[in-house]
Length: 426
Ligand SMILES: Cc1cc2nc3c(=O)[nH]c(=O)nc-3n(C[C@H](O)[C@H](O)[C@H](O)COP(=O)(O)OP(=O)(O)OC[C@H]3O[C@@H](n4cnc5c(N)ncnc54)[C@H](O)[C@@H]3O)c2cc1C
Image (cartoon, rainbow, N blue to C red; front, side, top):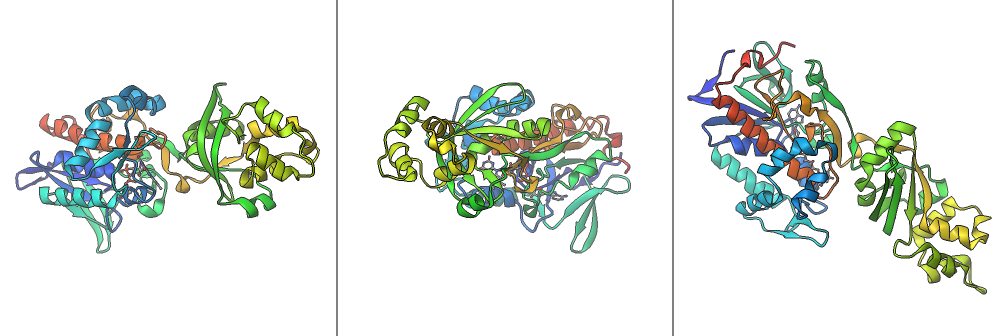
């Protein structure tokens, strides 16, 4: 293959300016490589900035062993990358950019000001100073004749040749921020195996009554536990908070089990969950409290004063129990401790925090190069892994971006072996 050289340097095109692509660019620049970063949007890091809106959770402070379990079935594939860039390395790297971090009460790690913008600003400044070329409003849409990358730009089509390419195109959620998953057919039509993108850390639909929806959509459900038995008959229980929405239910408590709930839905068409509205209380205690004489008080004020069930929690009981059930303290207590809800569907991918699915690891070598397409590397959320919220998403994006950058350097140093088909014929 013809090798493009610019001023004697090898040239690498990084496509996608999220955390994974930016980290790949940083790893490459200064290593005798010219780096050009292309992004479809007018500016890079839009999802990263959005992540900073609710408090940028960069990583997690738990033990390395616990940390790695968060990647589930993909732990083995991500572990070598995390070995080289783990939570501590990420915090040290952020500190180098002049940003202090702190560990929250949950063990999650945040920048001191909770924001993404100062970090991104400092990082982009350093990348520009190092010589990374930024090319915005460049939408990559495949390969042209010979080895040219094809970009749609406001000035029309632009063709670019590079010695190696890092694709860091993100998943398929929040398309308006740039990660629209439009890359999937570009790769699958070349025979590169891609697991279908699916919502991860997502909300779910519940068939609320009209009355409940109008009254309680947008209400937070605090101090709750969610129990659920997955497709392998494993019982899960998580405590936390979630939110009633017009369509169903969302929030961190739901996200924590979203992959298992999604898989259950795919297998059986419905996911049965139970909500514990009084997680600190035993069933016996709740039953005893509910069964106490209430005199002339209404049932609503009795439940509020005895078991602190009020507002949206009381609404949930009314949503699920029949008038007959409300005459039986045992049934009321049973519903408070294990309120049954049916989740009928995941919310659409575009609304999810992240995507499951992507380029499968079996198609990649250890440097994240596509085995069948030497010279093309992949990183970030576009790879086939998923993780819960808690900083695990960003950590793996940074770590895989760095791994892809290292993979490119190793491949270039080895003289680009087997590169005759770097850019495939369409
Ligand atoms: C609301 C929200 C909050 C979040 N909060 C957190 C959090 O607190 N902690 C955490 O760990 N994670 C969080 N995440 C997830 C995290 O932001 C993502 O996992 C991460 O940004 C993915 O990084 P990436 O580099 O792989 O892809 P992205 O950040 O999605 O970047 C991909 C880039 O590729 C570009 N691109 C796509 N297609 C093309 C194309 N054809 N041509 C050119 N450019 C293209 C896009 O414009 C984009 O800039 C959050 C996500 C959301 C939606």
